[in-house]
Length: 117
Ligand code: SF4
Ligand code: SF4
Image: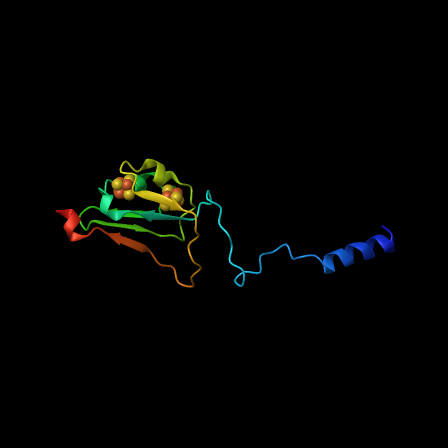
């Protein structure tokens, strides 16, 4: 490779935009089909537990007695199996990612008392 050729590559690199996104200054744009994070329309949930059984990462816990559904987002691998298994279609794969965090936490969804009657 000639010196002229190398100089051409260096100059092109100096004056071209970076390939990376400059996060967090420039927010990422999500595609419609991006698998980001699971949301539960908890008022429609019947606590059947199918989503939990299908989850390969053991990220979902369902408590029929407490009317509570929870997800450990740091375990979730966004495979969509729970969404496909839900008979009530109350699970949705949102196209935005879970926000970064320094402490692991579990997101809990509890059915309101009104819709339990
Ligand atoms: S998307 Fe996959 S890994 Fe995540 S909670 Fe649903 S079944 Fe589990
Ligand atoms: S499969 Fe659907 S209805 Fe059943 S517990 Fe999971 S979210 Fe609720």
